[in-house]
Length: 233
Image 1 (cartoon, rainbow, N blue to C red):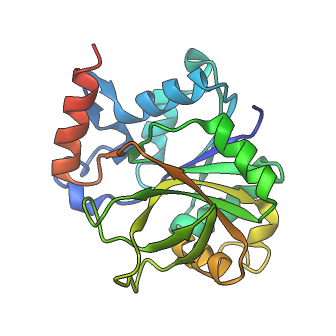
Image 2: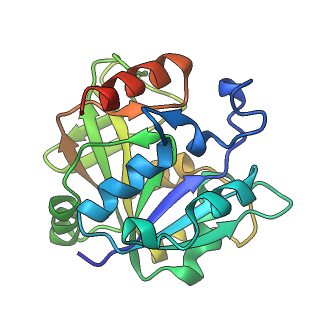
């Protein structure tokens, strides 16, 4: 597996204050490690070699903490937003010069137990512009926002969920660089906007996963994630 992984780690993390007043969310301590280290160790274990880290808020702390990535067996490149926060979509567009035609996208506050090699194979098999991993969550962790059937995301709508949506965006995507062609550079936009349009265009394949995700975007999530990694020994 040779595809790079983009990690989105540039947000202000206002929901996690005061913990994030002087520390970027990705560096919050979880079971004795900065959270992002758990992500990087898992990516390396699954054969990933290249990681592009989209940064913004307190970005220098991430670079100082992680360096080149050699200690994880990875090659890390940093792409800061600059003076203007570009959002989850704009920062990926900004990172394209450091990526190939296809790449994974992972949120910097989520730990996902899923097989990257099988997801990559499914993406190339179905020949769409993008892939979204989905979980049948029954509104358990967040409002369900995906209508999914037989490897196809029929509709993804984060802002207008409906009662016939039983799935949620699990937090890992796989994109083609060409899926971003209609978005100008250095412009802020949300990946949710891109995924929504791709679903309308029948260009978003899906991959169903069955294990819950862990996240540090809320205090309850941080508590549960701490318990999960502490139990791993």
